[in-house]
Image (cartoon, rainbow, N blue to C red; front, side):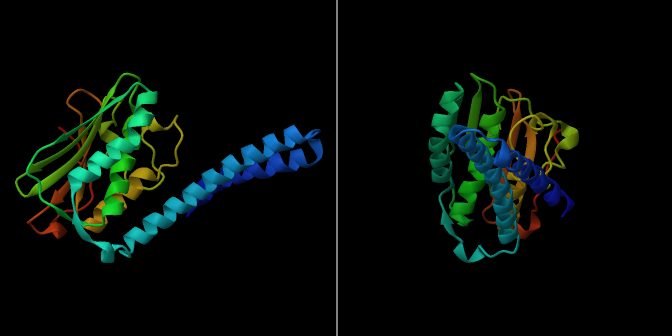
Length: 231
């Protein structure tokens, strides 16, 4: 509750002060329009926080289990990559997709799994410098299907990897970028709903590697959402 109040108070306080000053201080229609535009930006920030909190709550209460069906994870990854290609191109970042066949279908909520993957890609593109690489991978390790997103960004310090899935937490590389610290919390809720496991390690070429481990034939309840610190 304290974290939510703090994150909502900041944009609302700025909004109120700006509107109060502009009510008597604006001298033209253009100045009023500028104030309205900035106010809409701050309101959108506030609404995005509220929306993310509600989404996490909905998922954690397992309201989405009724939508579980067979999911082609390779197709989910390909569609997510296609969605983010234009954004990556603007930063001269290359996105590549590697799929190991054959892969089993998973049982889950396709829309939520797509949301989890796109959140991971969004983070990877955000923190990867120009001319870097974001690599998406679907592979299989025994009875485990692995969805992986890795980048060539600054990575996440090992000491912080067990904290990043907490709501509002922002790792050191993220503290100077736009965001509200809820993206990985949303991923954690989706992973937990499905009985999957979230893993963070170093990417082979530097940067960060996020894995979602999806059991296909073993007891999914044996796994839980966690950050695994690489040796």
